[in-house]
Image (cartoon, rainbow, N blue to C red; front, side):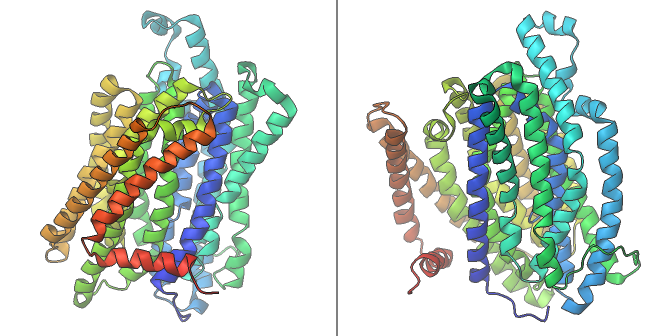
Length: 551
């Protein structure tokens, strides 16, 4: 691009602030959902119905998704004035395909839901044979009917997902990072408005099971409205940046368009394989007794993980990927390896201590964030158990994403795709083995196991591609950070059990949780400072620049 690129630190700061706003509002949205619906049928059904539209939104419309990655990879190597026709051609092609997908989802909502959650369609006689009472069977049927209705409502998110992802890639290629990172907050706002309107209309009746169908519809319509807003707000900036508009173009033979498709197609399938693992988890979850509660707990715990994970993922991956894309020549591979190390160590520095704290403090975190109104102590216990399972895999989740982006930068989407195909079968096997013993937490642990095998495989093939990686150096550093995180988690847990559980409400819980977290972070900081990692100095410099800048 002809425009001067922002520095890595500056971009990271922009992305961090914008993503923080989006994630905080996303957490508030989840708190409102928990208070209004708890582990009931409306939100349980929503988790099943959201499998397909959520799959498409994350797959196509997410930052660091395949559309975003492919467009940034290609457009960053072209002049701004050449970009508009490329973008408009890609938009025309993708929109046409996704309109057909939207119609198919609306028409075939029931069979698609049967495919996504077959446990909701088990015959009544079989359910009785398994020991389900009449109330449990009725609850299952209501969950199924609400989920089908919600899927039909949210079907247009297929088209919106593609448009959002293309826009994100175009804006990042134009060095615009604020809007793509902050735009997801509009989705959270619409859900909050929807739940607020429902509560205003129904009052305390919103907690009543007989209003589950209405609550489910409000959740679906407000989610769709959020996706519409998320797309609309990026259009003016995209136009002003000269990155194309809504004009129809059919110039599909352009070399640049072919280059984007060449990366986008295998990258979409590769990322899709990862999202298929989510569907596999919910497939098995639909057979768990009280499936609505199980998937609700997975949703609540997943949000607690995704809030910090999403922020730090954007901070690390968004500015790092364009840099990786410019270091693909063999003469630059030494610097490329340094950038890979930088990404992995930054991931370990942030994810490992967070994992330790979340494992040690899972129950008080769940209670502080969610336990009010419809969300009771039983829901907190289940959510905390799932949260521990999620926290175990935070580092490998983000580390795997960094390694995948390295392959994308090298123009190789096939290797991650092949690994992801194998992982589908591994995930199904792990789900089958672990769900019977551990229930919902077992499904999450299965995903963690798949991510570990994926990360190891990616490192192996990257080692061969780049003529060797400093395995020993990287392993020792990550092992040291893991040990420091373990001690930090132990310290936090000891503070938690040592402080009296006076049960004096939210304020005391916050004080107890804050004190335990602070002790853990101090322990981790003291131990890691002795390692004298350059990445630590970079993090400290970023904090000083953003929060202690002279006026």
